[in-house]
Length: 229
Image (tube, rainbow, N blue to C red; front, side, top):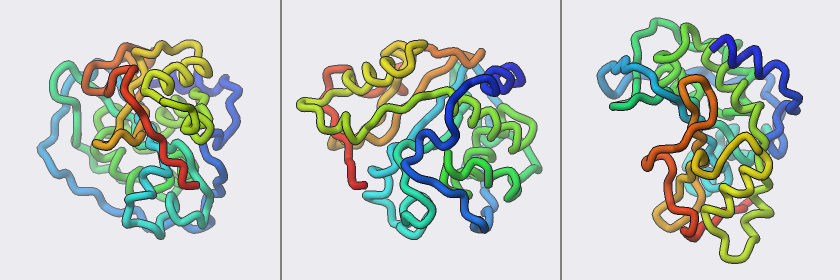
């Protein structure tokens, strides 16, 4: 974890590069207490997944239209970080024991990355507690990986004729040469709309081939991207 943070500090990537516009609010909504919905599972960690949601698709169907992510009040978003998840060779780790809850000071610097205090709190409690000692450490690790990625123009890509999942992977790799297409997962709706891009990492936080569950549809599968901006 310390090595990841040290490397990320040297990356010349502009802040908020994945948001169309974003201004952290002067006052943030209360951070809810998150209750576990399953037993603790402190499984050995074998790798990680960085999951990026395509915000226009989320807001298209979300009932939470007044939220920071969907209201337009604090900015307009493209890809946003859903979460950084520890993985295991069996069932993934979750809900590890912790008495720590994130504070406003912990979450506010990351609201242009993940524009929801509820989601930030949930990701720490369910996933981060299994890989970091404190919420602040977990968010810094997620932010370090997030800032190392260059995101493509999904609005422009959506206009490509006969767009496929493979086209998306190739566009991602073009902007991030350290990656290979088999390391880039794509999550879509039942009707083929882009939901998330899931990036697969080894235990050392290096790009790694995705398993079948994270890879998603084959390269030749048709893909649609909701613009709705």
